[in-house]
Image 1 (cartoon, rainbow, N blue to C red):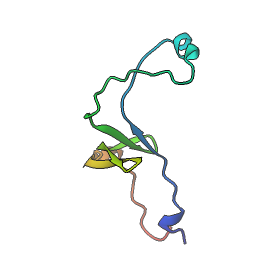
Image 2: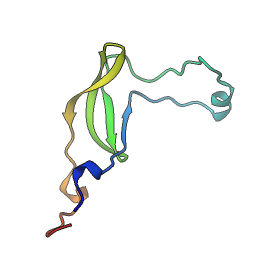
Image 3: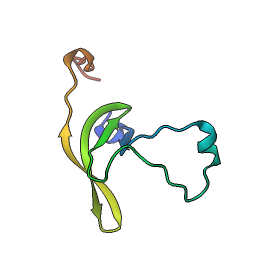
Amino acid sequence: MTTFDEIKVDISVVLGESEMPVHQLLRMGRGAVIDLDVSEDDDVTIYANNTLVARGQVVLLGERIGISITEVLMRPPEIRPMRINGPL
């Protein structure tokens, strides 16, 4: 029987976005800064397996960075996975 401990989920947190031509990206070197379209107080978006699931705020935990979840997003019923009846 599979347990939840064995299920892997890819979590991505997006702080902002930026557009630039590929040639400009390729010219960037170490220490280059990319301007994002957000401010430091804006929400981040949280994805699980490339599906938007929540929003949150960046928090500092000593020398580490974390995310405080502020809103869990519900998906409409038509795109929720079907439930399987019976044992897996």
